[in-house]
Amino acid sequence: MADTAHKDPEQILERFDSEEEFETKIKEVASIVQQSKHLIFFTGAGISTSAGISDFRGPEGVWTRRAQGLPPKSGTSTLSAIPTSTHMAIKHLIDIGTIKYLVSQNTDGLHRRSGIPANKISELHGNSNIEKCEKCRREYVRDFRCRTAKDVHDHKTGRLCESDDCKGNLMDSIINFGEKLPSEPLMLAFLNADEADVCIALGSSLTVTPAADVPKTVGKKKGGKLIICNLQKTPLDHLAAVRIFEKTDLFIIRLMELLKQKIPPFILKRRVVIGNDFNSSDGTWNIFVRGLDTNSDYLPASILQRVELRLPKYYTNVPKSVLLKKEPFSLNSIRLEFIKSSILTENDVKVYLFFMGNYSEPPLLITHKLTLNKNGNVNIYRLEFDPQTKEWTVDIDKKVEDCLLYTSDAADEED
Image (cartoon, rainbow, N blue to C red; front, side):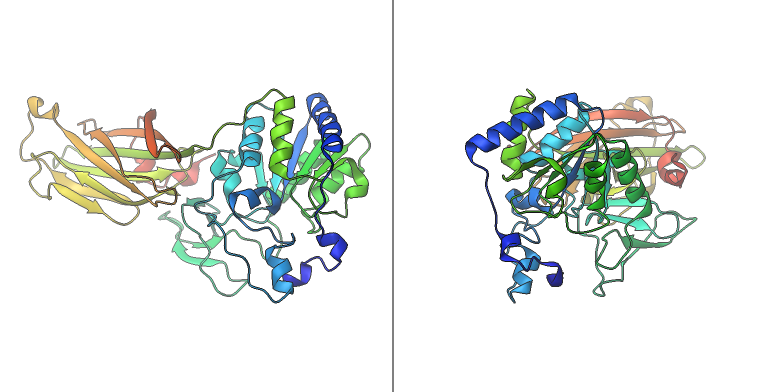
């Protein structure tokens, strides 16, 4: 909020190390990282400014401008923002095991979108693309902003849990001022801070507690090393083993060079399950399509705007083309006029996927073969979209033996 903006001009002032100072310091950081046993990263809004998203307490930050009676500057939507070099480098260092855990104050969703698994990050202030059931705590990932409430402490989104045994209210995950942080992410953040010998804090003013107590824990412990890269001074500077004044992208690019690691480009990754079951008693089929979280075979993800099914000519009780506009996407009780083995070789359904379009993704065609197997034919597809070339690549991630996993409340039984 505006009353949390920096009031001292010295706090607002952005500083830059000289080239010589920066090079000396970053080499020291590289050496510390290479010797670390349990390295954690802590990130703030400053790592997303190069993606076009405003920070909060910078010279043109949201709270800074509001304190001056000015509206926030327009920028890139968090839904269409491209994860930065910092986001992608962190993702890579987690993949290869250099970073053991990530703690973030950011709600823009770019860390998860970059490909970081949910079990490797604590998003202490929530994620604008995630909502959770208040009863069963089931998580839903969306390609749209979940928050709909106008009252600051009202978190109901107006949607309900999909589980037939629950149907609880879905709540956005954003943490506003004066609200408690989510207990499990906070616990995991401090467990990793207790184990960490090194913490690198990037793009954070380190003024908001209890989140800022995570890097503070590492900086204060015996043998712990806190590294801070931020353009403004922070209240934890006195605890830093290395204090760098530089933009986070330049910091991470040079660090990756010294570590002899390449920063991967951002590729939008999606997963979709397409399947059917067959009722032999009445000769009907059910077809279903749904988005999945990139790291779970069961957690749903709202990544599709609509689905079009184009059916073979042998169906008699449905149009040859069916447009499904609402989740869950399913077409039930389709009947074949007759069944012959020769026909089954042509028994393909063309599934056209239409995405939310945050990255101008074109529609994607996947051909699904219906089978007479009582357990159905269910495939999970791994989709990758390159925002630069605007092209999709598709692979079958896995085949699922039992379609009931996706036509019942099996997701509630995960773990």
